[in-house]
Amino acid sequence: MSATIAAPPTSLDEAVVQHAETALETIGRARDAIGSVIFGQREVVDLSLITILAGGHGLLVGVPGLAKTKLVETLGTVLGLDARRVQFTPDLMPSDILGTEVLDEGADRRRSFRFLKGPIFAQLLMADEINRASPRTQSALLQAMQEHHVSVAGERHDLPRPFHVLATQNPIEQEGTYPLPEAQLDRFLLQIDVGYPDRAAERRILLETTGSDDAKAAPVMTPDALQAAQRLVRRLPVGESVVDAILDLVRSARPDEGGGQVAGKLLWGPGPRASQSLMLAVRARALIDGRLAPSIDDVAALAEPVLKHRMALSFAARADGETIAGIVSRLAARLRA
Image 1 (cartoon, rainbow, N blue to C red):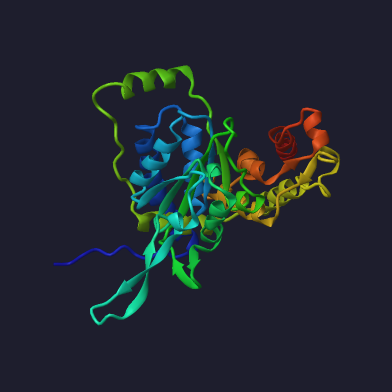
Image 2: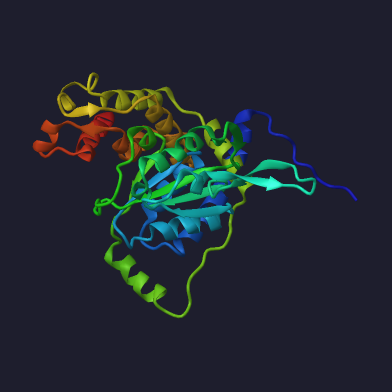
């Protein structure tokens, strides 16, 4: 019995193209599977996929009842990830997330400590209403989100691969909440604002979610396939014009470098991690759209979700009615000029 073996690609470019075609078909099926459960939030779904394909973490911000929790659960199912949910509350402790050591006694009466893993040891962690936990508990995620391992009692414990945090936050109910510190906000690749669905989507929600049958998504990808797609994203070429656009945008959003557009309006702006996030995100957006290289339009489209949570308005700017979204929009418009 003989088998036909495909000839290896003759160049790296051909390898990227072949891999991209396979990844694109799989990603397309994943989008459709998520869309069969989450109605009227195509942009939110795409930004969530961009976050994960870029290997990052996402902060979902929206009022209650917009299917943020359902979206994260569906992403876990469709991408084949081991997903867990933690409901953040004021009394939640770091050990409730990371895990703890317990004292065991063996048959020989010798005692030793054994580490019990917490829910953070998952491939997709949903941090629901993250700003309801105390700063001490919020900080338990800092090391994990950046370094993909945690330290407990001086011992390092590696997290599964891939590892992603998708956190949710309610923007209107602030009583009993603790604002996320800037260091933690900076670790989120994108801030994804979840808005209300349009009338047609809400009509579909009414008809399809209040009957006897509950739509459920089916697995489309595996963790290995997802990691392969993440490696592909990092291999996609980025033109010099796009690199310059990323640098121009991020640097112009800093108080001391933005010129008249931001003079006196910002307390602080995005650091180099924002540039890194934007570089990865534009590659992932290009791949989702079936392109092998990002464009300046990708940079402009992702400017707000990448930069919004990494900037702060001055008191004078707030008094004048300025918003971060408005400033970022004006800075992004300059890229197309």
